Length: 355
Image (cartoon, rainbow, N blue to C red; front, side, top):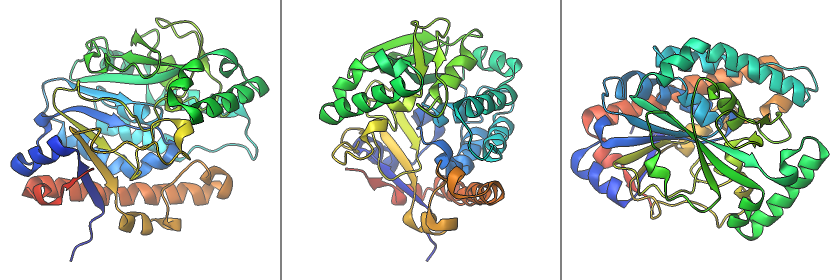
């Protein structure tokens, strides 16, 4: 019996639709990408298939929603050759190296260098001047001490984490959600997101790179990005702070939501990792299709785990780069399986009801 490397779970309406009709690219209206640093390497194969085959012939607009690594992954879409751009980003990220004890300035400088190579000015123009792929990035706008650097930021982080542990809505006292959106999109599917203070800013040549850098600016790891043009003034940081894996109402999406994810759980915000009762379920997302690696896939990885940021400290550069490359290569197993299930219509049997 062949091993399933991929688990496919869907909310009730998405499950019924796949059972009855299978899955086509036209049925999908929103593609979602989460925060998570190098965890996304196992999804690179799926990205390559989705960008280069599944959505390749699509003509009507596809909405994209990403924070942090998810937003960076999706920045390949809208470029002239999205597969080449995606593979470039994968290589640049995978081969990053730092000094023995890098500080915030060094890590931020390396991120800026990566961004400049991955997204040259010509790529910004390509993305903004096309309408097939409409980007939406979430960035966290800081309030109070969370907008400082150094020890004051740490105090702000600890205070905001404590407030969030009591009530997620209290996170809005420390961070606001800012949605940067493609100029061709009015971001209508986000209009009823009122769990946290939410603002909007249109992506432009003046703010594209700053917004992308900001949504990946992990607190205490990278410097924040201050005063992004076209957005409310202030300090901006990683969008995963407010929306780590998302706990948002997708009922405003006119179609299915496709969510390739590296974790079997969906954790709303960065501070919710250890709050087990805060997990998104299929009952909350009836139109969402969640693609995740199976335990068999994870067990077959080197070290029996998905890559993460602790690998920088635990492994030397050569061992880490080799391990991450193996994770990328193994991720193709999931992509091949997903492709096969769609092509043979096995997807109707493989989809599970997510409750």
